[in-house]
Length: 194
Image 1 (cartoon, rainbow, N blue to C red):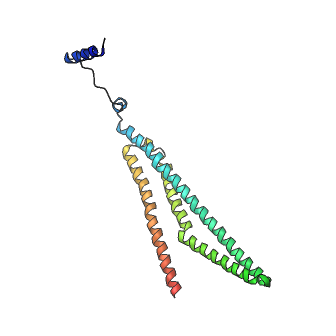
Image 2 (cartoon, rainbow, N blue to C red):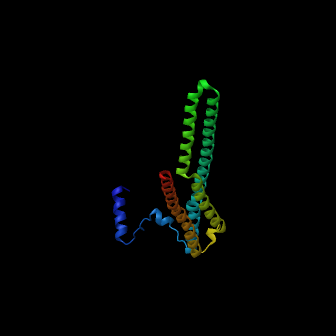
Image 3 (spheres, rainbow, N blue to C red):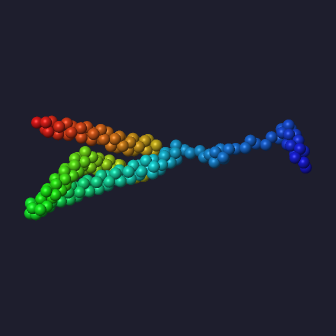
């Protein structure tokens, strides 16, 4: 049968009322109807994995970074202050190197002071506490409602609201941290002028 004949035959079948069904799209073929409970369970799994666990990992990582930075700053300050003291002591004992060691001691002491200012500016302990508090609150809530998928849609909504409140509290504390740093800066300026 030629191509033209096949086309005529298909046209004749359609004219006779024997229409072929329209082709379904891939989405229509794989579409599944879910109940409200199944949708809530899917949402709970997705929310627990992509929102809560990800945020917990973020809080944990940032807390650890802030704690490490704080410890490193303390060690660096201690090292610089110790080297400044050693340079000053050796300079007093060795008259031929007194000037060079006095300059080195002054430079090292200034560097230790600058590092102290840097540490105060970034407030590593406060940042670590902020992340630790958010991490603990979220961990406690996650542990209490670990079976998020077994909850009703209303219970799931309540847990999600509580989790999102924790995120908002963490965000709100950043404003307090900035305000506290500004207040300390103003307090230090007033005492410097006095």
